[in-house]
Length: 274
Image (cartoon, rainbow, N blue to C red; front, top):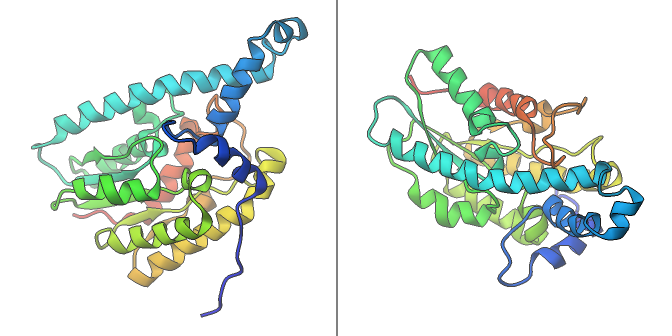
């Protein structure tokens, strides 16, 4: 097999990981870290005088703060939902992942890709599909291995897993690739994996600098999945420009329209049990 060239994290990711990796601090996405620093700036007297507080940067920082509140609301929604579906009839879909599986960025949890795909599965199969959403916002690949996979029920008819975005900031490249391979080796047969969206054409220079690294992560996902014969939902091929309307107020998580692209990618890869 041809050896792939080493690809390092872009310098901006390494710099932010220094702020994010401090002991005792909760995990936060890169956008939260930048917005938190920016929120302090926009609340200074100088920001009021200069107009920075009322400008686009101030509104963006406010959007990130609102998203942080939604994180807790969405988590409570899925916990209550999971409690309700236990013991009900119908084929069972189990979701592993991070805040994107929670639907963060959509107006409601059901507006994320999980809610959209669930509605489509019910419509196309005529079956009362249930979903057990074990995802947790901020999760890393190793969290799925250690905390989510052990909760996977044996009677799942469909398992999907989308993870890796948070690892870009919190995990070194060598461990990130090793963790992904370990996860893909551990998931049940026929698990559908989601690859990562490519930040091509968004976030300016930061997005362009990140593309080679994210593409390398996706190659690892596809290669490890192919070795096990697992399908991969190509989010990278469906969630693409034009970006207008596809991002939430934090300019990081997908909006409900953006999650529609994610849902199409997953539905194209899913062969539901009948």
